[in-house]
Length: 194
Image 1: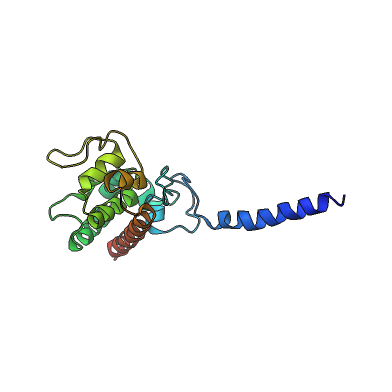
Image 2: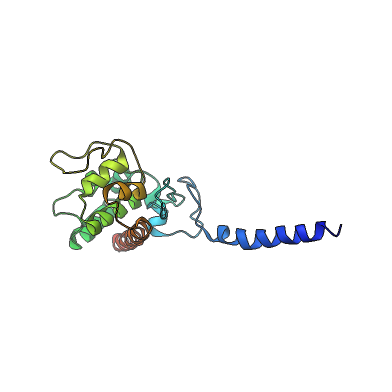
């Protein structure tokens, strides 16, 4: 019994110290109908959560509303959101005038992922068409200069950053783009409700 007490004490300490950060993390892939568990904006809209190493795409898509379908479906159903978000991205110089956001985001898993890719593209000065090709697993748009192999397989935002801009800090870029996408989507949703 005396030997069991230190082992149990050590196990409890490890549980509390090692497990505590797990409780603070956002849920992964909750499905379109589930609650958002406190996640907002880009997290609800699925901006890529692959922190640092780009492994996997742990986007949170547990919220309702704009996370409930593909970007094309969401923007087609909510024309006010489409108009406000397109206008906002164009006013920031992130989306060229005359670009249809539904077309630009076609093939992306969700709206947050697409808007985050738009931000990363602008920040790293890599054509959005290259990120779009990598993240949707399709060939780059005709006339776009992308590295060989771009679009050969579907990958997360982090993996795409690693492939297209190997010297970039993936964790920082993903975090920044997710926060910016979160802010843009929240602002556009607020404007579309006015």
